[in-house]
Picture: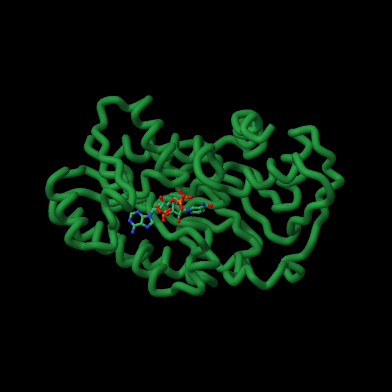
Length: 286
Ligand SMILES: NC(=O)c1ccc[n+]([C@@H]2O[C@H](COP(=O)([O-])OP(=O)(O)OC[C@H]3O[C@@H](n4cnc5c(N)ncnc54)[C@H](OP(=O)(O)O)[C@@H]3O)[C@@H](O)[C@H]2O)c1
């Protein structure tokens, strides 16, 4: 199996490449990020694909700064939508498929029950719209994994911020009216590898299990680290400062119907996986 990976220096891409090297030594991987392959450049994309001849393009690269996307609309569509079009065009030239990572932000979050893979998207933000545009570039031979609230050992993420805050003093505030499910990258990557091994196609939702709010997640992190959880105070989204331009879906819970019905079982509950990740990360913050 030959895999061309984009966004290989990002949070998910780094751990995906590392795990494949450990667990799937027969797979040949070309790991690329912006310096090696800018996928918004069609000529570069065709050159890389024509010379490496991948079976699958694992497209982890994206513009993920959701507030920046509101200001830089053309850039968001260039990276998240047009870049995906070029990769799909390149894939067609050599008979490869595309594995696209997508997001809970394709839904409006106004629902009250978990979103299934077949529910109609209705993104609120430019990030969500541009990621959905990327999905629409693909066809039924490709694979899409929508995930949410991603946290891993590489890159920046909200869990690292919470750990840092737990080591400080004073109160911290987190919203208690946005609900979702954390996704620990290790679990996400395990599922990605299974789906690739099985040559799967179609849309899958992959997060950990059990719903929480940002407020409850932060209290859990403080408790796990032995910090005082009463320092974490709940606030409403309407009280957040207005520099956060992108609207966030209030109910971002993804149901894993395709995993279950496809015989893959369920992912671990987030408490287990987040605890393991905290144990890995805590020393960096002592
Ligand atoms: N993080 C989350 O909570 C979350 C939630 C749901 C879905 N997702 C999706 O999961 C995927 C992986 O997310 P992540 O957290 O790993 O993102 P990330 O850490 O921001 O990594 C994305 C990588 O793509 C690179 N990139 C951006 N533009 C590029 C271009 N034109 N050519 C080549 N590389 C480019 C970035 O480089 P620079 O950093 O130099 O720009 C970065 O290394 C994305 O598709 C994202 O939409 C993420």
